[in-house]
Image (tube, rainbow, N blue to C red; front, top):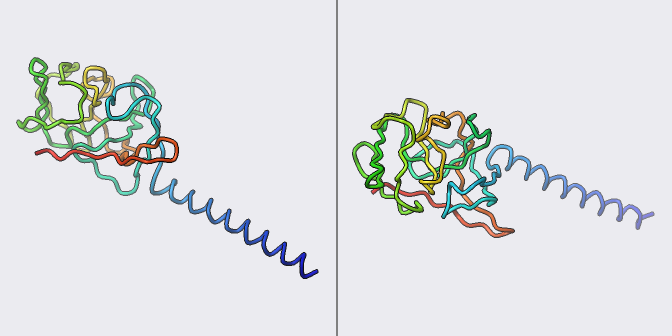
Length: 182
């Protein structure tokens, strides 16, 4: 009888540990982090098609250089992965001949892009980001449908799922680093 109780106690302990682990994982992924997958080549060379991301969703406020996940309805009917270029109140200008992007009259330092920005999209520039929105672009500027196009447009802050903080490759994680505008 004692042996049977010991087995039941061990089984109960084991099951309770497993249940607790699932509860902790649920809380983490319900309130702090989510996962997302990169679709397409618009974030090359930094993020590639099919790459998995860990996204921080807790108390996120967008800022320049952040890689964000966007759930805003768009012409592609997909969640988008893009980089914040400008936030509310900032003015964007794109010189497609020189391949340069300006925010508030200052050229952006963009070491993360695949090549210079030769595609302006279908807006008239300069353009100012409305309150409660961001302007986001892919790192593969000439192969990205992003805020430069009215089919995506400005991204409403309420539709930003969160900031991508890690990319996963199997069980390894690599931190995604934003950029400070110098």
